[in-house]
Length: 291
Image (cartoon, rainbow, N blue to C red):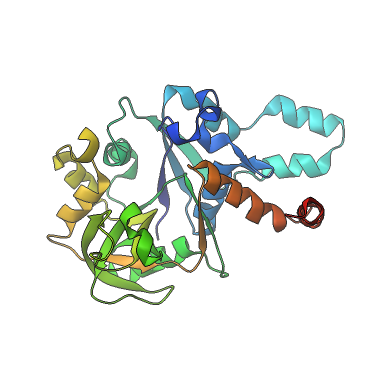
């Protein structure tokens, strides 16, 4: 079973300025809770029991959010606000631990993953990029299905989604012989960064969810700096492909890029409409606006 997940949260969030000047972009709320809580929930629903935050000194509020707040809990108890008390206690289930390590320099996603090497040991693990929310459309979420596939075939899994052909030049596109159906995996030949329209080997873009073997850590140690003078996870995956199969898993859910302002607003809209307490009133508000 995949029990550990790395969440890289050390980035400065320049796409979300000016809000991210003082607030970690991961802590910007989607309806009534920070975006990163949705990502943690996704991991927990997939069977993850340890969340490893790769963080930065300016991101203490993320660690604080997932910690217990004795004073707040005591106040809610005294005021007999039992629903709110239960809600904040359920942010992290008791069987799940959240730990953090620092990324001392902004040297890329590959370097961020490598910072968690000592906590991973020799276990396979998941990587979830908190900029992206993945909304499940099935009872078992996509990350859980990826983990199950890894257990079955022992091949690294890269989550992908289909994008319109005219937009392939905006994404990392996987090279596959055939496009799998949703919820299925296929061996891939590689990843091509932002191919020109008309030259892409498929229309499957990398989403930001990975299931990787512990071996990738040794490969990251050997990976030279690549694009942006940073250590790229995709470069280490390319090295892994020289000896091991790597599969592209085509997701069946819906993604929201909360690192961009428009993607964030789209997420707020979708999650608000389906909110158990606010959804009905929110739909009425939209109708009143007559958009």
